Image (cartoon, rainbow, N blue to C red; front, side):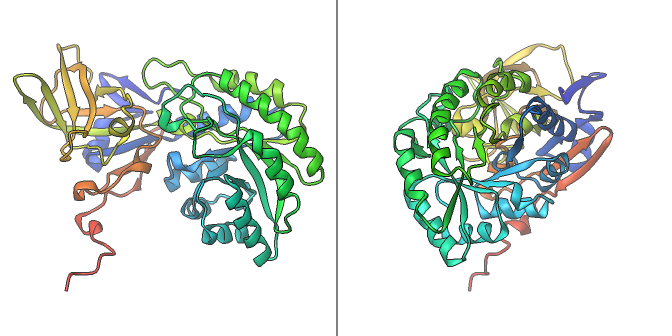
Length: 416
């Protein structure tokens, strides 16, 4: 569903005008559509209904407790990359037995915490991590369930910062080396082989990279099955499904399933999928108010009260986000840089963007901000982080209050 549409000339989230949310909760403000988020999960879950599967939502995309709770209630598992994300899942009502633990730098304390709680599987990123998992398992007198994150050397054709399946990536174990590592794992008393896993990148808008990578993974899986016929349970193809930010045409849930299912249906293993952006990306916006319009001899700047500390993706990745006025207008358009008040030249949401002329006090919506927005927000320039609101039909709930100035120094001892 398109959760953000104009109704009677005003941009709304589901049935609620964004202008009303700005008046009630202030700006900058993150606004999410519950029905969009749950709908995206349900569409993917339904598309794979013909095989045993679990959709493990990637918590790093958006870790708000209300969103995690909504997905847990819809039947989601979770892909976590830290003890903090596991703690959030538990607080939101998620089950540790439906969590896969990814990440290249799991500490001994994080492994102990997750192992005691009983996560489904640890996605192992290196031989050094495998040794640590074995040691933790022996010390706690239990076997750590593991899957190797295999690097299949497939180019997902995405931004190099979020491409994780190529040979030069810090992630995973080379597919050429993987069988030897599995053989070593089969001899360790503190671990148990449960699965085979890959994750080739993020914001992937084509199905061919998945096809190539899964084909490689299946050949390895047949070999691993011979090593651990009694314990091998899952085949994890990672996440990375893209969304439309501008003109991309990513596959739908059904199109993605049409590529994957013929490849995996006869493995008789549980299929794990780890989407994040696909579920929440287009389910959120950042609402910002124009503070000033500044004209210089060479360009126009639209200065908003939102900044790179609220949404860093344009500064970090050079990523595109649609930006539209909350009140629809057919007036003349101008070309402008849309920027924030942070003291960095990189503090921008758009450069040279064609946009309807606005003035101080007007509201703008930065679109497709549900993923890697608030999750990457900071207090840079000692700016309190924004509030978050969840909308469901006509109902709204503040699911994270706006930080105060006092929150900025909470936990810092007074200077003496």
